[in-house]
Length: 141
Image 1 (cartoon, helix red, strand yellow):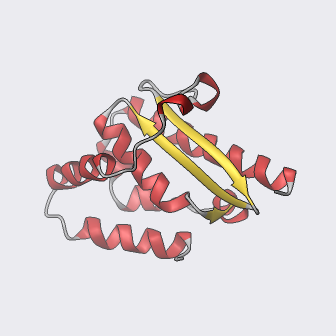
Image 2 (cartoon, rainbow, N blue to C red):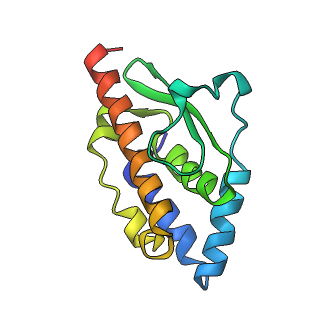
């Protein structure tokens, strides 16, 4: 399985093929729509990301030091951002998630083109996943 760096490069390459921000926005939405469905019973308060205007859920489990999770959002654009995080971090070592350099979001232009509320939400999602990675490492699972 490719590591976070390889996946970031792949995503960067995919987005670079798109001519303008509208196409990138559509691709982001498509990525969200292509995500596996999250089990409704996992959409509970303890899996809800605090600090997002939209509802965003991450049901994260630690399996042998690896982050394994389901995720969803009630917003199409936000779900696309969730899809990027899902692609980057799902089935990756918690240590790598914790240490990940996420310059990808700057490179893709997401920080420039998202509203401040969505940017804050993305920051909250990353913080949530990094906290889960730290928990995973602390528990030594």
